[in-house]
Image 1 (cartoon, rainbow, N blue to C red):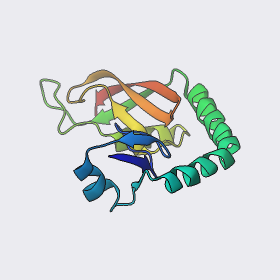
Image 2 (cartoon, one colour):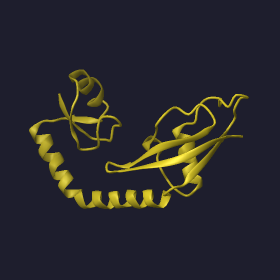
Image 3 (tube, one colour):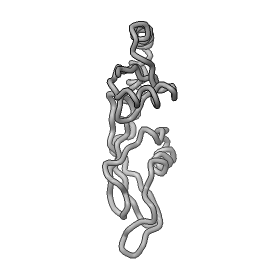
Image 4 (cartoon, rainbow, N blue to C red):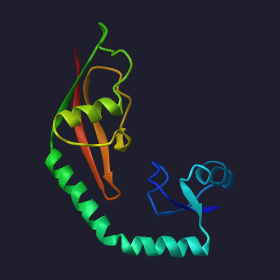
Length: 147
């Protein structure tokens, strides 16, 4: 089943993308939640017109994302948390903690746009990926230290 996404969905696609999904996923989840539209000819034409009209806005958004990635640069964040004797932390470092640390440095990044390369469950150095735009991804290093 082909659908047109109305929002960015991690692992599936970005807004206004035409994607193929299984019928049940499209009919029972994406369409009822308003995350997608059926890819009929009329919907394709309407979305095509919207994309044309929003092209100049999209260029501005991409430029803003690139400037944010450039301003973050090689910033290294420090996340402090409680840890046991062997270096294992209680719980795990979350995207919300990374988002808050970036906010404290003056960078506004939504927690939904942060993804981890691996689960963070011990003290040490790690990397997260910021999905700032469809074409702008930026890696940020952070260090987990004991509080």
